[in-house]
Length: 122
Length: 364
Image (cartoon, rainbow over all chains, first blue to last red):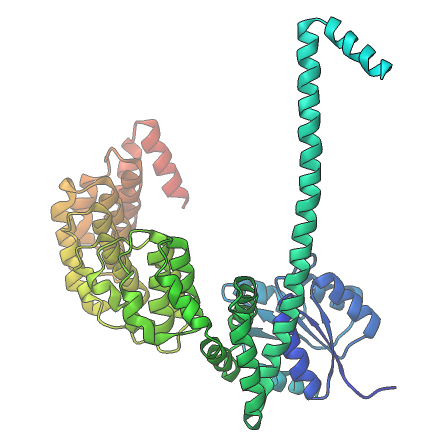
């Protein structure tokens, strides 16, 4: 049984995914990336992560649907951080209503994200 | 061979119309076969291009991450990456990919890393290609160049960009305006001082949205823009006056009530209404008959917030106004300031329209 905490990152921006993977793995987390919501759900079901990072707008299945699936279908209570862009304030509210724990508005600082992840995983 | 001759002989014996149909079918058949071959080739070509794009994108993403995470002691690594990128971007296709990679990350990341991306954009020489785009004769290339310079926050080309603020093509002007405001915040609005060309409605909304995201909400003096000869500048300044509660410009707003442009007069009434500026009431009452319907409606909407019993005579003059909206608003105001008078008028109302308005207002 490994002690490394697992994080699923659902993000369609491959460059951002790579940057966060590099940064979070440096912090000692195991990062599982998914380029769309469908793959994210597969990763979550297979690996049972300790935290989820998800963008709102993604192909096939949106971030909101990912949150809903995790909270309602999988009944998992792990922390979820949502990435939003300018003009998506109402969607962020919906994300909180569905069970998201925190959100970060793009553009965001990876250092700040690390702090928030650490706080949520304490 | 005999069979072929037999077919030819048969074809020659066919009626002319059938012959034409056969020939056309043949031609169409050849065209379809050629199209199928071409589409197959095109699909292969695009897939191949996509693969090459993905390969380079993945390579450049890796290089970018290495660059961003290289510590200060690893200057040699950074220099090596910059050198490699300088060579790569000489090729147009690779330059496009590298720019895509940088842009994608610059849009989503802030802080020190965003500064590093900006630094790499300059160091690799991509900035020179963006600047070269400004010299292009094609407007779309120019607009893209300005957009890139804005995205990577290149502030020292302000004067160069300023040359295009009155460019004939609106798309270029839009990018120029976004460049100013994104990079210089409220100070960037100085371009309004002598702008000749119009600002599109969509861009006005975009500029306001950008301004609202800044921490420093200290707006500069908007008075000169309210006095501008450019109608769109005045309209934009009116929006600023309302959003940023510029009470100190009320006197200029009152002057705008006599502006030659009707849209500006209507908007001025709306802003004065928002400020509940009582000073405007008498001016608007005096001009009421000569005002357009839109101004009259805007004034009655304004009265909803500042109506007094002393306005009763004016309101009574308009309870039979030919415009349905004004008539309704007048009766609504009358009900508010003098219910008895409203009820007495309600009793004598004879036409269907008036009865409907009275019924509606009595219930609401």
